[in-house]
Length: 308
Image (cartoon, rainbow, N blue to C red; front, top):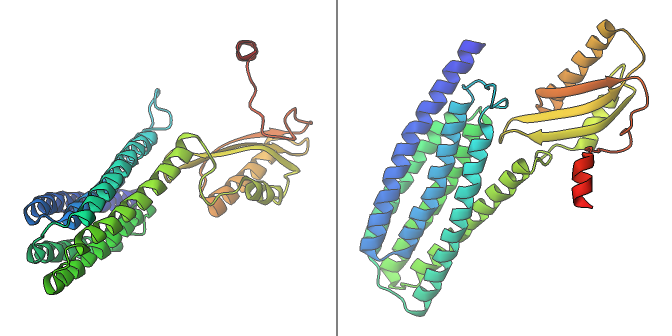
């Protein structure tokens, strides 16, 4: 099992590494071509490809980090480093999106002649490159981290195809306003994906409940486990984008420790199978808990005094 995981991780890292290099080259090509063709759509496409470049980079870093064991000072490993990088990058991309909107409005007011043939050829190269990368990522998409990179790449393929259509429209109609209109659409794509990343990373950094996981549902499922009388003080959060942790108090009967081990095993099996939570801290109790009626984090007397 360990050998299979290592082999899969190495294969995923290889696919991501080649995809990173190809995307970086295409970003440079679209940037240079956009400047030469005076095409804001191509320049916006370069910005959009930066989002995919960052997504691929974060996926590659995540694959690398997963192989690193925790240390005495980094007890949870380095999962949050990728989350912080994603947050900062997404904020940068929001500014890029608004700059694209600003430039597009100026181009709408004062249209600039573009070179549609250059637009089309660069976009065709982009569709071919992104299509090939999407195929290889799709073949490795059993891992959810790689699957997210595949979705980014597929979206980029579709937006590049839109640039081809826009180039043909300009070529046959001479309507140069199509170029800034396309850039507005691509800017919206950048903004939409960036806001999604900001929302997700902020939730992780603020240790909110992972998306799709309900504390109430967890408590309900654990209460149904044989031997569990009560579940309270449930806290669930994400260490990284796909690594979740949980702590809770569980009320059980006054039994021997050897008997409680069977209950603990069943609780962990439910958490792993139903919610994909593998890192747990569970406290068993057989008396009334001081915080049984709410998730309370104690405040130190010094902090309370300072606040007052």
